[in-house]
Length: 236
Image 1 (cartoon, helix red, strand yellow):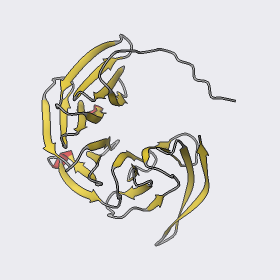
Image 2 (cartoon, helix red, strand yellow; image 1 turned 180 degrees about the horizontal axis):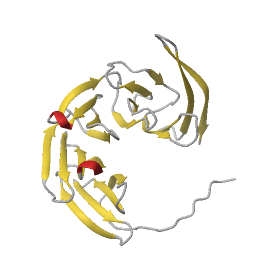
Image 3 (cartoon, one colour; image 1 turned 135 degrees about the vertical axis):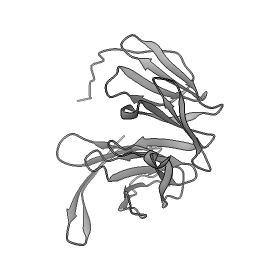
């Protein structure tokens, strides 16, 4: 049977092209980053704009709430990351992060860390408690890195999706990927973890018009970690 979703509330608003959205964990807010270079915070209950930030003259492709700091962080095509306080509207930090378009930013759920990925094929780890110092660079992709996301069940690890047709799993503190999934025929645009149930599902979406669900189990020995693939399913 086809999946049916009940729409409880429809929110529609004209804007420039929307490149990313994020939900605030406690407030009824949607953060949208726009191709026009603007960030908007919308209240989905009142369907009104709460805040707006003029970030750049170039597209802002990714933005996230950092609710524990009352921040929004944004990465743009001008290769800069910007941090704003969403209560006071103050600009907290601006710094050049990459040498090409910034595709994605991802915030660690508990530690003062943020990941960024870029068309320069790099993933960088930033520590805001150390003045937004870049504390690690992850190299291994051979094309644009479209998305990065932390594993909610093991926040020391994260996944990355790239147009080199691969998805890689990494650990903080290690320069090399733990393993690589290469089941797609074209570039991989997005990746996320499924948090329900006991099995650690990883879901990817690609330019080959498929979404793939990888089910894996990690078996830890004293000195070695083995990866056992249980199944890979494709969805048209």
